[in-house]
Image (cartoon, rainbow, N blue to C red; front, side):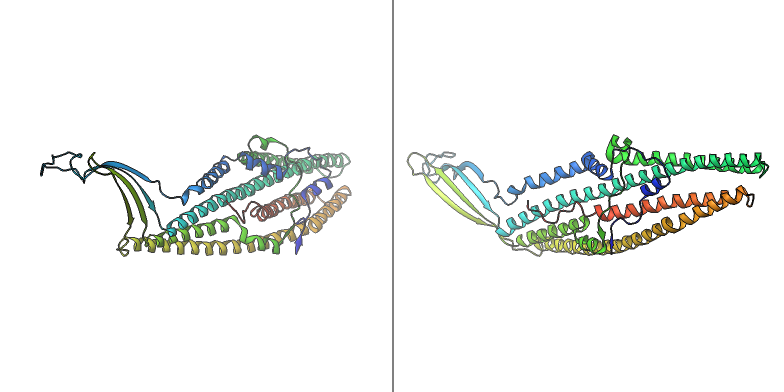
Length: 421
């Protein structure tokens, strides 16, 4: 089922009520972009991603070689004509300079690179997650402020209508119809509307403060346009579910844990090293060169490498289970959001196309009856209050629907499905 607009717009309703539009500058899309540019948190996470990328060339490099120098085979006692602490009278004594190079096994180096690549993937998915969450929060704040603006306009129009009704009642009273109580009743309605207007002004101030948190001073700009007509269908959002930043991040965590398991397995295999040294003896003896090969001996795995491997495997299983749990959570949330979206769309259509026209017809009939002296003012005031509540409820339902639509749209917009560092 394709939903192109998800029901009638509040802008259309405002125009139908002949409420003047406001020249505005900040659209929802502009607010989201401003928020992404304004966020210090996103910039910090992007720097972390850059750092993870920059360290990639070094992660599987060989360890730095070690240069050493010293003396070897120095006698500590005089014997056979050789003086103690002399390096010139003994063929075995020599000044030594050499270099050693360690060579970790290939499994360790491959695991180190896989872990670093997973770290880059985690960093980029963290950026996507922050961008998605910020876009949704900003869109919701924009929608809330827009709804408060619509309510403000409706309440102001209702106040004008109430003032006209009060004048009508006074005319009726001057013509010998109605009573002074009717005037008081209409004035009470006017005060109720003014109280509602003041309350809504407070809600607008809160909405501006919330939007300012995301876009800074741009929150004081006039809002322009309405929620975009995103082409949403259940098949599309269900297909995109696997690209949700939370799922991609959880998958990257699994890949990182797999690399750590591979590194722990590689710990069970020996590393080796190579050493080359030059020995300079006394003037009566020849200089010498030595070449050595070394190898680590992981001969007690049950006490050293084994426990670490078991721990890493447990962490891997935990990451895999967390991925499964997140998949289930988002699948359930998607079904719930889509069902709510359809229900709200049906309610909005019914309210806009049926309930509001009927409420207006009822008011028109009661106004005619009141002019003819066939009904009391209380009946008309109640009908007007009922229609006002329908208008405000329509705005609330449209805002709730637009918040859902924004979440379904923006939660996939910044996901990085494939990434080559």
